[in-house]
Length: 53
Image (cartoon, rainbow, N blue to C red; front, side, top):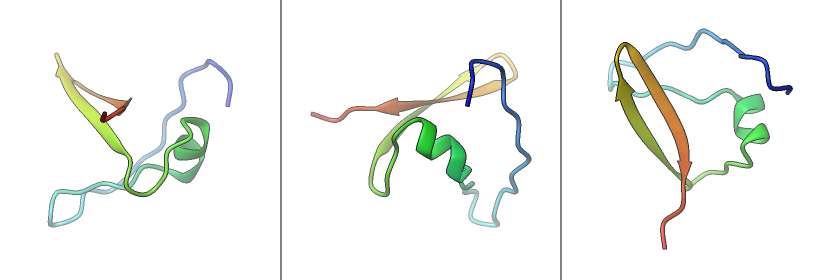
């Protein structure tokens, strides 16, 4: 995945959850059990990998 913006359509479940696409998780080296930080900025949701110590 290069530095260009990547967009994929995902569906929100009735429980309000979404799945991060596999190629995004792979690119960010994210695995089951990892944490993310979700930021609301204007009309955007920003998801960042988080480190819990």
